[in-house]
Length: 258
Image (tube, rainbow, N blue to C red; front, side, top):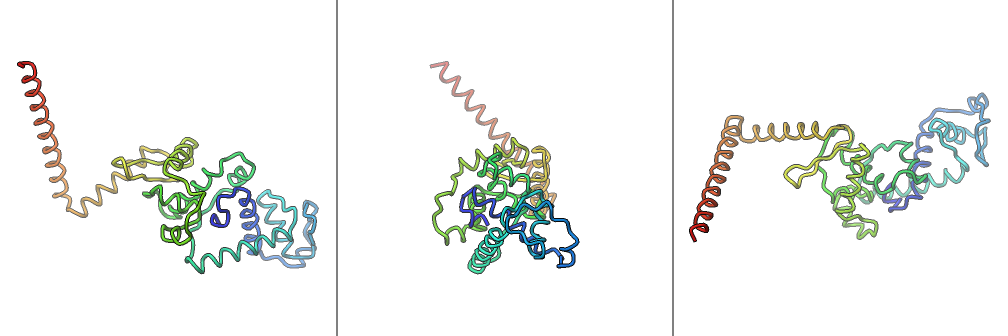
């Protein structure tokens, strides 16, 4: 859907209407129920109370506190986006999906929440998926996902996009999302960036990553060999520091005598 948006915030309302129609089509609702239902709340100019499809659309919109001004226009837009998605997935395979809150989406549409931060949040959510509590995600992955590309391969096939962000722009938006407590992000060894939308504490996220890395190391080398390796590595580091210290003292002595 973000390929359809192509960085255009105004198309986000179209995606919201697309979701409403999608949900409406899942409802079971017949002409008999149409006649028993009070539709006095409806503000759509072309609403037909005897049409079950119309009824399902306005009832679904009501459930989400949304107003559909013109049902025919929304239905046509649904066909357009659905055709776009089917064509896209036929060429590039099934795409990644994620859930974004209705209130947050409406805030973006109304200019209350920045569109850039919204699509970056969606990129992180779609990469994490339903099951991952946290995951290592690169800026390149975020840049691809926020434009609707599930992989680097798809991004390369679709060619250059003028709305693609650089690392600095993504980093600034990630910091803002962290300040708003919508995501948690930590960096391991100055280069590996981990993200979570479920864990709200950076310290807790660090603990989980450290525990996982220690476990992986023990499985790879064996618990005893790993403990011995770490101890030896620490001793070597201490010896290196000691040698550098003595060299520095010797250099200082030589300079003083000179």
